[in-house]
Image 1 (cartoon, rainbow, N blue to C red):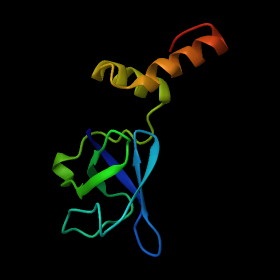
Image 2: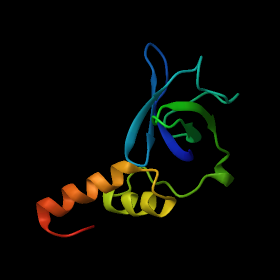
Image 3: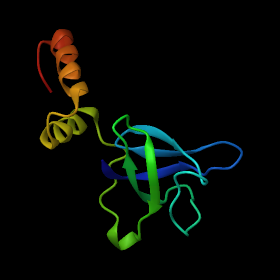
Length: 107
């Protein structure tokens, strides 16, 4: 899955951190960073995640191509977008059941 995110922490003594749709993901310079640009906090990146939602690759996105920042997106709108992408996200159904059990309503 390809998406965009932002760098929260540059890799240094430890792994770097990316914020993608409200979730944090680790990345390293040696394995996943595929850009000539040095990773900096706040930089918009294009990220490829594997089926287990681990970072496969990350690269800087030119400012002109960066989409709207979704790092502060609310969970309900994130779930709606994931549902629209298709049934491969089994976690969506579990979240809806949990939500339904707590409040009696779906998001």
